[in-house]
Length: 141
Image (cartoon, rainbow, N blue to C red; front, side, top):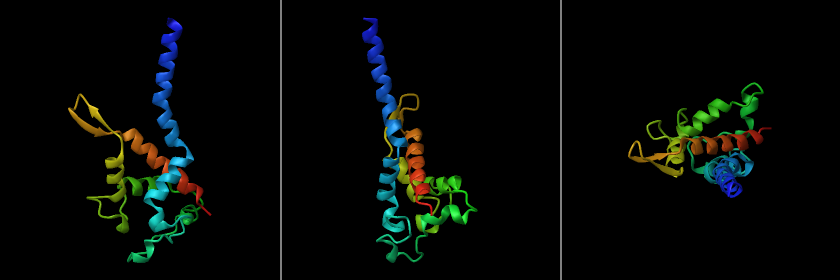
């Protein structure tokens, strides 16, 4: 009986950990990029997405971020752009940041019994942003 209990507990823990492992892999970053970035920045990150021609300010190439930052990928700056803390004119005003808000709306929501309301799972949001940044870092020339 103890073996069965331990097995069930182990499987339950694996089931809880699996989504986080999936989020950390490159596939999630690629999916995030295709769904949120490629229309403006292009499939390869060159700033030549299909929507770029409609923008007053052309989107920058995401392949040059490391080069423009002295050979170091600007992780924190990219994170702040994605979560809405950094001002980027094409991404909208800070009162309503496009991607910071989208990540909160799209995230799996959980009911917090202590707060008595639904709240965004910040861990999942951070993992999705980190996966996207990991993908963009691979686009560097």
